[in-house]
Each structure stands twice: as structure tokens, then as C-alpha cells.
Length: 251
Image (cartoon, rainbow, N blue to C red; front, side, top):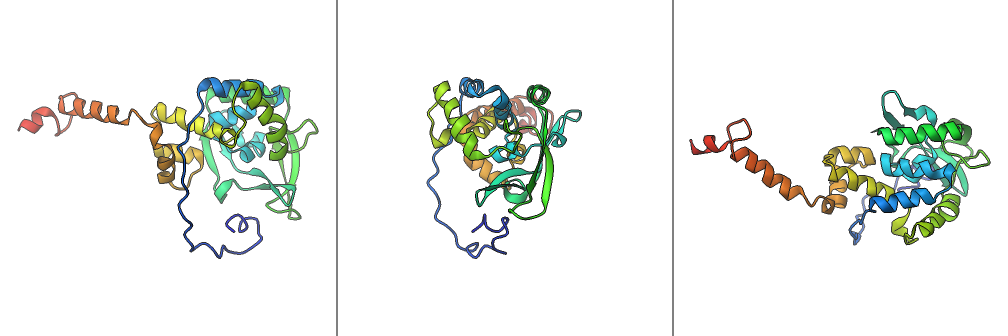
């Protein structure tokens, strides 16, 4: 019902006030760097940079399919996530990102170089698709990733004929938890390990609620206690300026 609203099937969700039972969510187990690299290498050359957008920009699969060269600001080092490619009634359409929320993601140099190399080898293609539902006004975008037939990618083809074989070749179990979404978990793990705060991470992931991000990835922050102890030791040990130093406490 929620998905039917942005698709234009219904004006509002009649089930919005009904609270569903809480799902028994298993903990996210992110890939190791070696796994992510192996899966990327196992993809055909034309599609390897897809993995860089997932692992380096936290983009969802459909958002990567909808990434246009005009959305990629190499000079200011930012990627504007403005659309996704969706399948509605077995037809491809352009649509807003999940939740209808556009976002900006900082562009790391490694991903920038990967995208630049990809664009040089596989120039962007102007693709025209209906906006949100089949039959609506068409929209054109110069997509960075397209098929060999110069058409927009679709999840069925990518998952069955590109992603699953890459997982098998890389020695990664071809299961639901290892779908393209696993790259977003890998991104989140890397960010948290390197001190990116949870609110910023939520923004990069496109989550409306940072609390959801925290609930999903809090177990990936095992050093939080150590950082707290170190911060307090510095403060009470006189290494930090301010009223709450050891000397100030004695007063």
C-alpha cells in the first residue's frame, strides 16, 4: 500500500494508521574488504563501477541504474542522488529515490577515478523513460550505466546474469543477504569504523530517521566504549580545557 502511493495507484495509504508487528531483524553482518573487492572483480568490466557506487556512495541498486553524468559533480566532489530506475507493471520508469527524498553524497577520490574511467570507456547514453508510471510524461537522462544495447539496466537482468554469477565466482554465498544491498552495509561499516557520526551516515544512506540507522548498525560500533573511556580520561586527567578537569573537580 505504501509503495502504491508514489506509483499513483492510490491517493493515500489506508493502512497507514495500522501498526504492523515488529519484524525480528537479524543483525547486519557486513562484508570484509576482501569480499567486496572479489565480487567487484568478478563482474564484467562494463559493470564493475556499479559496485563502487554501492560500496563508496551507499547508493541503492535502482539509484545507481538512474545515475546520470549530470548528477556527478567531479569539481565539487559530490554526487546528487536524484532518481532511480524502477520496474512498474514489467516496464522500466524513472522515479524519485526511495522515500521521495533526493540527497547529496560526498564523492571520494577513489570512486571519482573509477567513474571517470568508466565514462571514458563507456560513454553515457541518453535514455528516455516515463516518470514514475508507464504512460506518463517521458524524462531523459544521460545515464552512466546502461546495457550493451544502450538501454537502462533492470534489476532482473543484473541480479540474475551479473550479480549472482559474480557472487559465485568470488566464493560468496548467493543468498538474499548478499544482494547488491550488501554494499550499503559495507559502506556503513567502513564509515562507522572510521568515525563518521550516525547522523551524517543516515544522510548518506538516505534514511529519514537517524534512529533507524543507529538501530541497524549500532553493533558495528564496538569501540564506542573505548572512545568514551579515552575521552573521559583525557578530560579528567587535565588534557582538555574547560571546567570539568581533574583540577576543577578538586576545587
